[in-house]
Image (cartoon, rainbow, N blue to C red; front, side, top):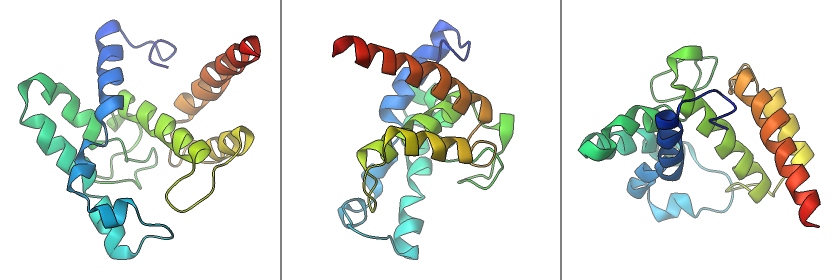
Length: 160
C-alpha cells in the first residue's frame, strides 16, 4: 500500500510499524468494552475513543517511537473532518494514518467487528467506496481496492 501511494522507504517503514501498533492505546480501555458483544453504550464509546490519545502519549514518551505518535493519534480522523480526536480533515491527516484507517476498516469488516457479522469482500469494498470522501481518503480507497485487493485476488487464485 505504501509503495502504491509513493511513500519512500522510511515512510513505508513508519507505516509498517504504526500499522502494527496503532491500537496500543487500547491498553487503557477496559476489557468489558473491548469484549462486549452487542452495541456499545455512549459511555463505552467515550472510553474507546480515548485510545488514539493514549497511544499518542505512550509513543511520545519513547524516543524510538515518537515519530509514530502523530500517525497513531490521527488514525480515527475522517477525511471530511468528522473523526476524532482532533477533527482533522483531508491532507491535515498524515497519509500513513489515512492508509491505516482504510486497512483497519477493511480488516474489521471482513473479520467481523465487535457487534456485527463478517462482510463479504464485495460488501467491504462497497462500504469503503461508499465512505470515500467522508470517512476515508478517496485516493487511498481507490489504490486499496484497485491495486492491493486486486493483487491479493490474483495471488489467491494462483494458490488454489
